Amino acid sequence: MKYSFAIKDNEPEIRRLLADNDLHHEDITTARLKHFVLGWNEPKLVAVVGLEIKSRSALLRSLAVDADYRNRGIATRLVGQIEDYARSMEVGSLYLLTLTAESFFNKCGYRPIARDSAPAGIQETNEFRNLCPASAVCMVKYLGAE
Image (cartoon, rainbow, N blue to C red; front, side, top):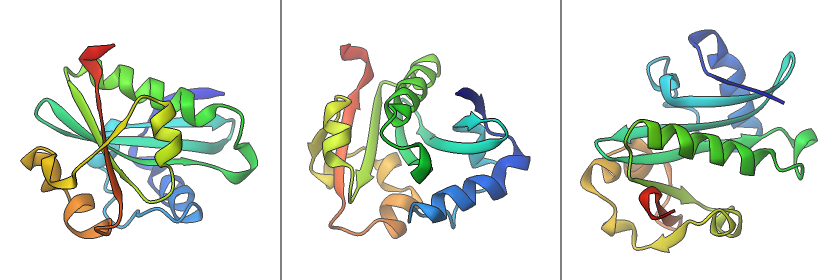
């Protein structure tokens, strides 16, 4: 598995992988791809995860692994890579919304919180305001506590 940051040419493949995983991709733009990490089994894109950075917090979003590559630890490694990247960007806390992966993220050290306790910048993202329903579980991981 090879990892890289996304570039604008990857946008169609990223959208396809997110759509195949029933994840929102409507708001993916070239500018947002700056903080996306991709996993490759050359030449195929098999995994993706992204951040929306808001000051010292970030929204972890768009974690997806191709169905043929699941249960190999790829998602766990990708989350570790995006957390390392967040630390390098001086992000202290990562937030996310999930409908289906709460137990996976619990294993990665994320904890459920009240949605309205997320910082204002995180709550103002399109993911929070429009894309994820109120039934989505909000989770946080404080990166400095490791």
